Length: 218
Image (cartoon, rainbow, N blue to C red):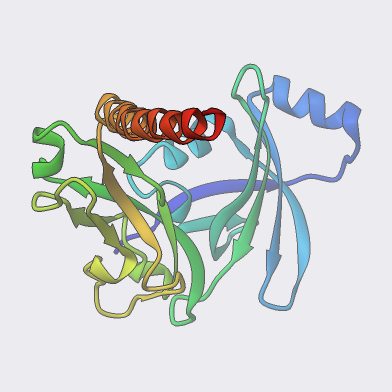
C-alpha cells in the first residue's frame, strides 16, 4: 500500500512559549524517534497532518516524512489534542521499517443486521479495537465481523474475526466483541413475575400455621 508524504521542518526552539507561537502559525510541534536513531524535534503543517489522521487508515497511515532532503518511514503516535477545540497540540512520529513487524490498534466494524436485534434484542459492542502485529503496509484499515445470525443471548468473539494474511491478533480469542442482550423491559417483567410467584407461594405457608396455633390454644 502506498504511503503518504509529509514535509517536516527541524525546530530548534523548545518550551511552552515557542510551541504556542508555532501552533499560531498553523504548525504542530512534533518529535521523530525510533530504530536506534537520535530523536529529532520537528514541525509539520497542522492541516496536512489533520487530513492524514482523518483518512480511513487514520493513525495507521504509513507516512514518509521528508526531513532535510531525506525520507523516513514513520507512524503517528501519542497524538495530543486541545481538549476543548480538538486542535492538534503535539505528535510523536515513530520510525518504522517496511519489512519490520510493528504493533497497532485496528478498529472492529460490525456488519449485517442481527436477527436478535430484529426480535427486540439490544446490541452491545464491548470491543471496538483489537491489537495486531503486522508489517506497516499489512495493517488493515479495519476488521469486519458479520453479526447477521446472532440471536438474543448470543455473542461474537475475537476468534470469529477474519484475519488477513500477515496479521496476528494479540487479544484473547474468547474475548467478546459484541453481544445481544434481552430488552430491558423484558428483563424487568421477568423479575416482576418471579417476585409475584414468590409472594403467591408464601401465602399458603402463612395460613397453614394458623390451625396449629389454634390447636395449641385449645
